[in-house]
Length: 117
Image (cartoon, rainbow, N blue to C red; front, top):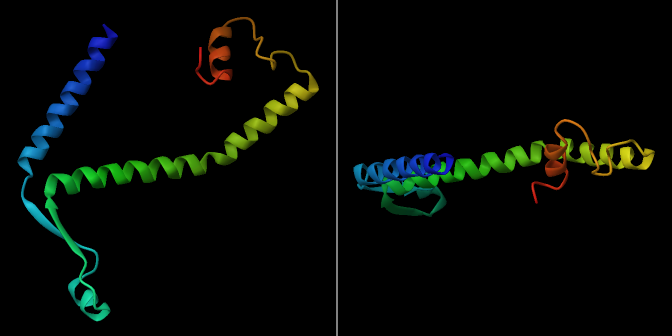
């Protein structure tokens, strides 16, 4: 059931992207600099591509920038977690050797293993 729901979701996404692409096939020109500034600099870099490609590339670039930003932002938390785990193992606290017992033990084991089975 869940697998079919996943396929349905991705099917709707693909159909939506195809419809968006078909509706925005016009070729547009993209320029790195405004015309006056490009004339002063002596360069006129520009490229022409379909509008849907500009939209898709913009969304993809935004996602990549957002993922990198979050990864960098959470770096402090990851290093703090590593220090905390190392200190807990060094102090011999129970449950820090991966042998967690009790409610949610399977979840803790999966999290400690990085989601690997």
